[in-house]
Image (cartoon, rainbow, N blue to C red; front, side, top):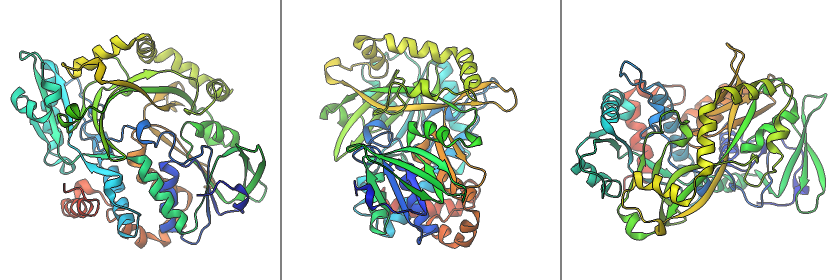
Length: 497
């Protein structure tokens, strides 16, 4: 991958940011428009250094198998599976596309970026058990969640998650579900593999190059201004299409482009902290990803989870998240990112959220005031026999939560998820927000190309269907296709063990 911006001529497509979104879009365009020239500009010295990096990303392979915030319970006791079904379907799309890329020559073994890990949801108390039982009943009726197991037997749970059960009060009510179809995904490695494969077919990837300006020209193209971070030299290229996939850096760039679609949008940065252990003894006794419930009134980002991770061939456990705060939109960003993102057109939205999101404010203040012992007490609630000396605190990535204007009330709302912004003429697009972004990157980028390049999608539909057999179809209502897709992706991605 090149660090020389001088080799970047005027391309058909410019991708801003060298993360999983840009890498996925480059791969999709390889299917839809193999003759197009593509240039990627990444400000860091390496690609996948921010939200896509393995230590900045939970790597859960979000399929809604264990994340309880995707299956909210109602006052009548019923559990809504709508969001879980949507996210699982989107993850199946990602798996299909990754399988296609492996079949067509993605470098290395799929075990480098994806591995099988059971996903477990864990709750305590009578209320938790009642909810978990209802959740299991609701999800089990969905074909996408076939095989989901339930137990409220402490002895069986001690076999599923011994580290979580050891030392726990035997009188405590516990309940859990488990899916052995879960995965751990190293999105950093996957991003690098996708861009390496893209480079082989002509995609130009330039690192150390910060995009500082986006200007719409009279001929409909975009002038993209790029600054070399080492020399300070500035240059520009012209392109027919720009995608801003720069994580937390996307909002300021879209604001700079001054497209009407970004009006009213703001962002609120939250940094993540995790406790990590590499103790072989502890790792050997926790072969799962376990998600609990957020505290009453706490935001979805606070859901505690104890994850088995495989990064660069080494297993470890991560527990968290603990929230921190920085006004930076990227780990390598500026302390002025947040104040400079406040514009006249989004001030109302941001002030509205400041008034209404008191639970988030309280949560962040509480988290920021915690010392190491307080954070360890939170870990002990999940892992009763945890020893403080076995765990180290690491800083994960910055997440910029989307603030937008509710079209019905006109008030600002905080959105926990991703938001795709596409210009009216289809010449520019960007992605805002966080989880479950990486896991559903293929679906997000499919939506982008459908909106930006509908003619190209129509002309190359057969190629898309070859890459993604379920494209345009609903897996949840087609058991035969679902079974075929699962069998093929498990074999190609080497998820059978």
